Image (cartoon, rainbow, N blue to C red; front, side):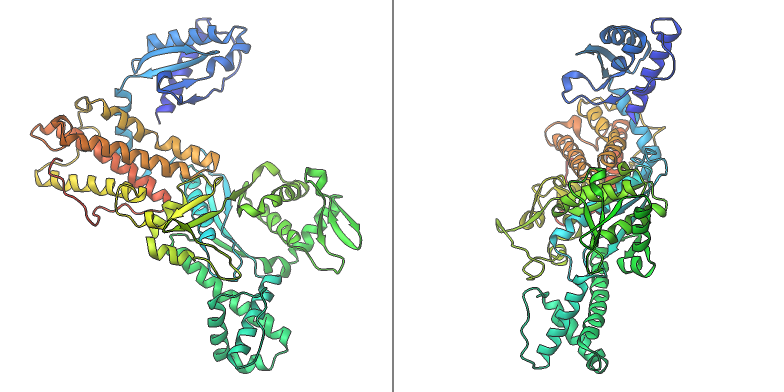
Length: 570
């Protein structure tokens, strides 16, 4: 928001320098507006002079000084301009530009934070895609929340987003599931049957076996073992997928589409994809197998698509699936995988390039491991042996909001320790509680203000000049950054930055509010009605930003909370 205005100032200054002959060049100029890492370097900085220097035949610092002189004399919102380093222009803004930004936040309301960076481009985010062979565990949960929030961030940034779950309902894992159920059925019937280690060990298998025996016993007894395994694999897979969908929904995650791997085979999509690669000259045969020449596209080795016995590899299905994605019109495809799939990225990009699509339009995001910590000790997890904490168990223990926020407390590129004890705390140590409490506290202040006959004024009525404490424009500036934070999260595929930003907003608000205990100038409700209204207006904008960011994260913004303290110094 503020960055757009700075960009306009710079463009107007460059245009003025061009008109009077100080800068002579053809065409348009593209430059960046950024926020310096250190406050001493100003509020904003631009590389415009560095971009223009060669085109105008001057040194970057000389160009920078020319633009800076024009800015300093022609823009009232700028306090001062400095040329730094090899030719950067640093801006020190007057506080009122940030306070004026509050009017835009108030006008936009629930839409504040949204941008048009994506320009409506169709984009797909595929995430979770766990095999329907068991409940979602805590590791799945991290990828699920990341994918859901990333999709929300991309929508807020102006993309047309479709969230998709790829269901692996064909292959050995479904046969193993069916076999696991059949063996449990036989055990429950009194047979002395050994249950192999490679079968699924969880108690859910016994439950499915018991239900299947009651509902399909006669027809199963009439089947051959292979027929029974296939039947039970499909039956169990459908039931588990239904539970997965319920589990995700209760975590606040609803996919727009579910795509079944079996469809690729029934529609001959796999054969069609292989045929296209053959047609384009990217397939060869060796040892009776059919290979994709992926090394031609940067992969470290060629990949088998069809084995010597005629069976297809999972990679062949994945090629067909991604071909299908692009055929559906997505201009960009984002897959969210576990960290153990790192070796798969190169071959997938190679396949996309070989099919004739831009490999740069494909992103594979690898989610690092999550360790569940209880009582200071890590909980061991293994899906097949069923020694893991399910997503449902964790969510039920800490609550949906804490569950979602804690998965975003670190970058997806780093391993995460999910501290159950901390997630359950109702204190400032728990970041999601702290953020929500900031929202509830503002609601409490508004209730007290209403009792005194005061409500936040509209953006046209408020006197922003009364927000003259040093913390107030700083808080306003932070609030104005939400659109930039959303755009950056979308561009970098890093939704955790929004969680960090939210915590920063809550901390700055709480620090500002708490000063009212010792300094009457910071009290929100006072006998000075106009100043009180200005402070209420500021807090209303804090609340808008908290609500909008929490909504993108899929976290509630309560107006009241357990143990809420109605402070007397509001």
